[in-house]
Image (tube, rainbow, N blue to C red):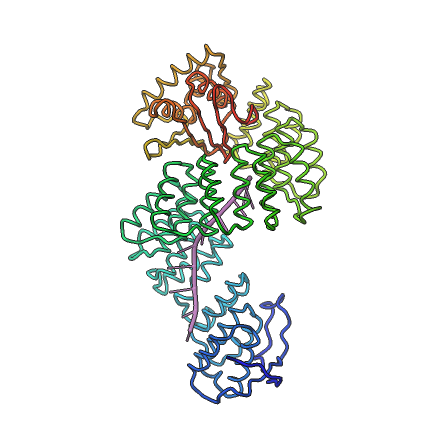
Length: 617
DNA sequence: TTAGGGTTAG
């Protein structure tokens, strides 16, 4: 045990910190007073000092050892100096760490990687990168310890250009076969959304360890088809790599994106069978997975089973009820959270406000919005205003929504104006839509979705010239809408459809089913709304295009492939259009099937010709 | 003596 006495050593710092490296760091004095340890043996065995440093629990102990090894000359020993440097970085005392580092007469690869890593782990990417540049300029070879830190900086800053430069350094030094370096590169490319490069690197790895697999599974879930992520997980297990809880949380996340209930159950079984403890991160991911797979009750069961809940857990449960339109239950969870002593954060309020909006709880939403700062010291940002625009807009209070937007000095983004325009579409308010659309097109001139939304508003009002102008603008700017995709899980298999898709083996039967449904639905009162078709073609062709919307293909397949009495669950990557919403309502009436639609993380339960969200989708 | 992957919204 180290004992502090009331004596002091003077520890010289080695050199003055250079700008701009520490422009924001606290000033470091040339000497630091440190309590002395008179009983320190005068041994010159480096192992002794390394062990003492390992036992050092705080910065005072570390400074004390620093004083001792300076006094007896042991600081000249690289092992001792590096360990001391490492301990300073572990304590996040980077000013003193860098002072020691820059004063070291001899530095080896360990010294450099500890210093670069120290900065990066503390989130000081500027100095981390500056130190790495210093290493390169000094002609030192970067190694497999230093490079992952530098690649991590490129990943977090999403700086693909720099990432590629570092990749070049990796190749130059023949380090691409190192698992740490390669997994970091895969992760960097994936986070920069260059998924093909990530996959190529992964496929070329000679021996893939658990972390490499986890990174690639997460990358697939994020950038490609989440189904592919689950296939990759199966391959990993087949190859004898056993997952840990981090890998499981990644897989659970992939299931959440996919929204496939059967897969969720399989993953849950796997987690139980392999006795993974329901820690706060895995548990929270599972709440989110069940909620996004349409089973809010299972999400709640997981929530109730968790012993430790953090603000993310509570927020996930609030969001879960919000997705399903259970606003009151979301509010109950919020109140339970407060009683348990957990403070809400900005995301908690986004979840809560959306829950109010999706359930039509206008008064409650307004109350929570105004309490954010007053009662919980959470400042409203543009996303909270977006929730409020959604809340007021859905209720038809468009003027109030616009007034609220205009009352804030916050910079408005495309999400905010998009929510406003969406509300204008629901209520057919062309004048207000025109008023805000320029702000939206200025912010995101490349997003075809905005042009389509405005075209639909014009079409609904019969303003064909304006609609045609929008379409011409899209052509001029060479814009194409992101394809809408709908998928459905049947017998543990995902079936995906795009508009006009004829690639499914049951294609003929699916189109015949839609034709037969259309005939029956029209008798029941359904009127196809061709305003949701943008193309300049005659009405009959428009009807054909409308009939091949991906949602309808998935519903028809669901009716053909599942037994009566089973709910049909479909997921769409974009919002369901107004015509499909109406189509599904009528299908639920004439077939007496429950249909659950997930679009943009909101669930719509269709039953007996009604939808849980009313007509505000 | 130094290293990696996981949770909520949009």
